[in-house]
Length: 237
Image 1 (cartoon, rainbow, N blue to C red):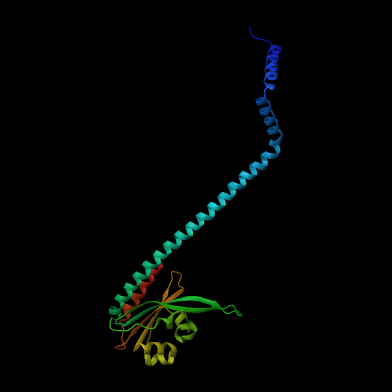
Image 2: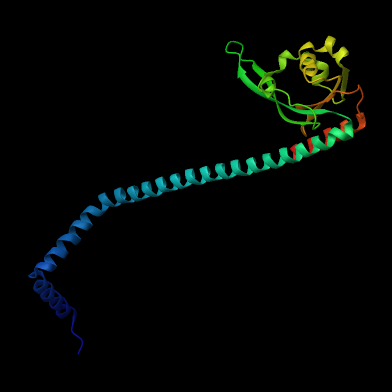
């Protein structure tokens, strides 16, 4: 026989009264009541704290990932740079014979410090690679490290800065064009030079190849353009 509603309520009440006498039940009941009362206040606070910690963790993970990507990019760029310069050095060495040169220098331009008043950047250059005949001596690299373009009339001239053709001079002719460069060429026994610019894909000049001969006044000009093209291809990859 199924008990009626009043009987069910009485059974539940008697059970509750019986459990209420037990301490463990009283403790559980108090905790439950406190939880119900505190939930509207503590709930959002706990949620915000959890969300805050998750956000902080996400930010830290993002920073670590960005740092990892930057380090990986630096590593890949470094490897790419080494490969490019190794390939370029091979081209220059081969170019000695093909162009009838005794020295070939790769000049690369970069921006130095600004003038503190005008804000104009100093245009500088380094000789980053050189190839030379085995019986010749190396130049003093300190002379061409972070050197100032403004010292060299040839490099500074508008005609040279915008040209894609090769410029040829004997040392006698160079004396009237660029005495500072002529002094350096004479110091290694040069008799003639050929200078040609290197350009990026957008046409901007980023460097110059300087060919020097010490025995006669001639170059194989068609091969100078070939060397220029090979160097540009290497550094455009």
